Length: 305
Image 1 (cartoon, one colour):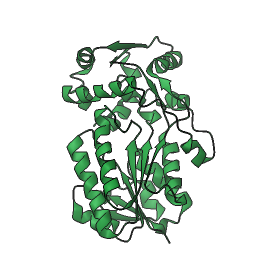
Image 2 (image 1 turned 90 degrees about the vertical axis):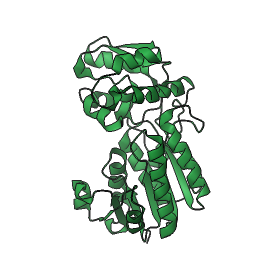
Image 3 (image 1 turned 60 degrees about the vertical axis):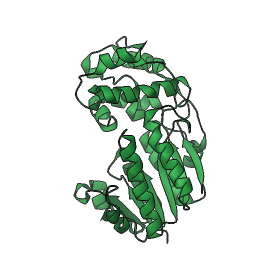
Image 4 (image 1 turned 90 degrees about the horizontal axis):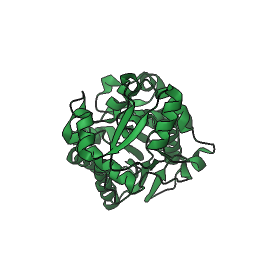
């Protein structure tokens, strides 16, 4: 019997991994590690999995949460804050070593290994920590969620009535992929085995540029949505003062580096692995776009931290 621990199971990706893991192995083989067990979702409560308290910021709690596990899924800490992310991931890796975990699966991001994007820096450091840990690992560079496209598309919110989308530096292709496809693929990779000490990209099956998203959004809304490539200062000026972190200059300057990565083509890489693991076609980006239009405020709040 293989014992699995899933972190981040109340989040967008982790919840999908858990949903599909439950289709592949008995609930009795799964432990869900939550920093706040009282916040467990209905899926977790009704699934029959064991729930333990595990907080990335509290190493002792991780020892308890990971005890007896064979395979551990470390879902990356949801923040662009580099130092906090790296420290919390290191706590999880150290706890895995102390408790005898045999294999760590880590949800990295689909940028390049030498990325210029600020959001990727902590992932690069964590990837290096995993390689130096002495434990078996699988680094999954999870593709950019289709559901998160407003974050990359100038924080676009159809409800605002704004038809001009301002981004800095460059347009570029992104091989968008749905969280559900990523969750199912990640679960299957964990269960089927293999992929030891390897890094893999889980991408969508084709890339769309931000210009193409503007065209698709225009057609769906019956409005002329225009993409404007501006200077970083103009991009900041267009967004500073809005509610949430995406209205803060510090966040906006960090996020602007994402578009430098787009300019390098970091996110346009298409890898067939996810489609091969799932054994079917991936969910089209257009389907997600149709579903999420009108829901952008909540989408941005979920990803811009």
